[in-house]
Length: 201
Image (cartoon, rainbow, N blue to C red; front, side, top):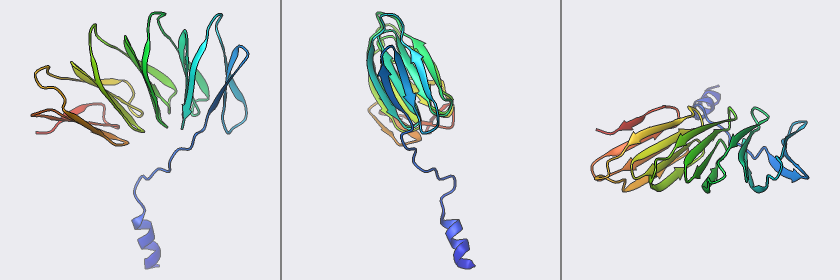
């Protein structure tokens, strides 16, 4: 009996098994299909003249970038979520983790929560310069010359930390749940399950 108790105590609390890829996307004629391990194929119709530019899927998420939209699919909600983009808007970076997706254009940041299957949007300022992007399974941070913008798979939304132009971010580190940014005199921390930045003092 003591041996069994020791085994239970040794198991990490709240441990999660890795998420396997749950979605495969295919384009057939004028439709986009998402295939998952369960029954049914979830489809979305292409608009007149709309062209599929890229597809990528990982874990809970699938992303389809077209000439008119960003389409996100969640295996948790089993539905497509649409985000219209401006014709002049150019996608500059797109990243997909098992639980979230991040798309950066020259005008906006778009974050997708895989658990809830919904998009969140943050405007980029005129002449705001992106310096770095850090991303892992549950958290992503975009660092610009003005601020740090964090997005979490759990809390959703973009959480802002203002940065001084006189004190640029010198380095950043990230794991699945935590991002740490370092300047010459400060250290900022964002955690995936807290909707706020914290400064070490």
